[in-house]
Image (cartoon, rainbow, N blue to C red; front, side, top):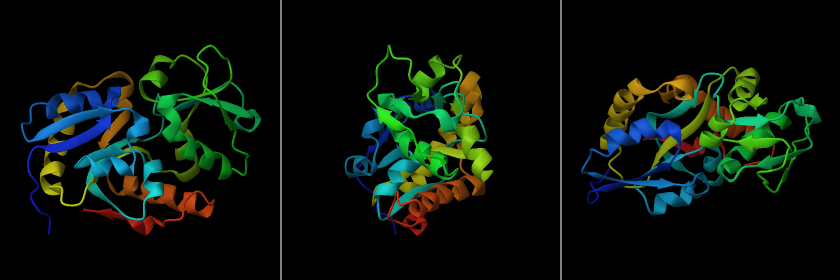
Length: 238
């Protein structure tokens, strides 16, 4: 049974365009404190400091068990418009890849997309804004570079699995008031995303059965390729 911790509840999330409408609604809540973080800071250890954290599926690979809010997260049913490998070359011809600091969480996904196709993943190289090498980008950077040729990771994942690509899931710390959080986040997502347009309109803030299948498929694929030790049974929905 969940306990009621002292309020306000701390909520951490990546400060990117697709969380902006939701956060605008959450700011009206007196029982929450909001903490925008860099994507690199959003791993399972963040749950030691925050009651609820928006994590990438890659962050789930490092934990033995984690509790997720059912039905809540961010996903793309095909193209994301932002989570991209920028290069005009075919996947099999890309040897090295720059990784933008805000896209480091996409590296496990990129590796699995290659391995599942029996291809050798490209080698990450230091990021250089002035370089012309292929670039792995995400979020606001991917949005700003939307006119460049590249491979959309959402499309690649859908082609591989026929499932939506889950970009983020809401994880709860032990003792967090998950029923309240689920209600609050669902309401904020519903009201906030009404105003979305452009690339944000490609994303969904509900995680249904196919999104849950996608999370498990990602985990299972990671285990099968030696990228994770934990099995998908480590994912527990509150």
